[in-house]
Length: 169
Ligand SMILES: [Zn+2]
Image (cartoon, rainbow, N blue to C red; front, side, top):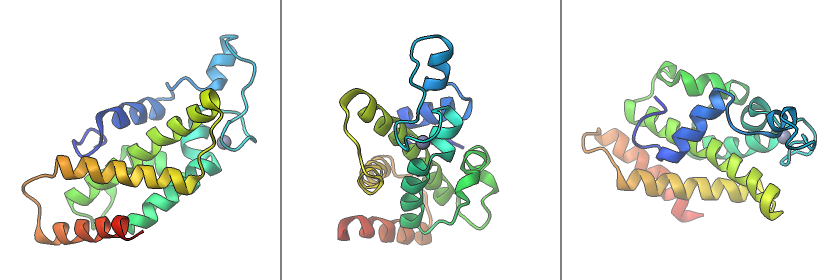
């Protein structure tokens, strides 16, 4: 499901690596003696690992909560990783809405990694609200450019409402 075309390709790739624990986080690099600083750069509390950074860090969770609230989706944030792999289990949502869900979660994962690198390389700290806005713009632009032709009027209406929220803020 994360391979649906509404999600930006590079967002899908990072998410796929994150699920598999293959993003080059500090925990792995310290094992290879590349770095000794293993602290998470976003919360400055825990050790930075794939599991922590993308699915447990308060920074990531706060960002993703904004995103899910925007879409009106309820999701247990502690179960994001699982829900990313099993999106088809979201009952009561149309295929289009599930694809949007996948698009925003993968965009969220990608941007958390991006925000982490902003701290690491540029010493710039993005507040979760600001990161959320970037994610929102990114998703709206992507979906507008690859909008499926066959979607129901109900889905179109829902998506228009979601977009409105972006332009109104
Ligand atoms: Zn953290």
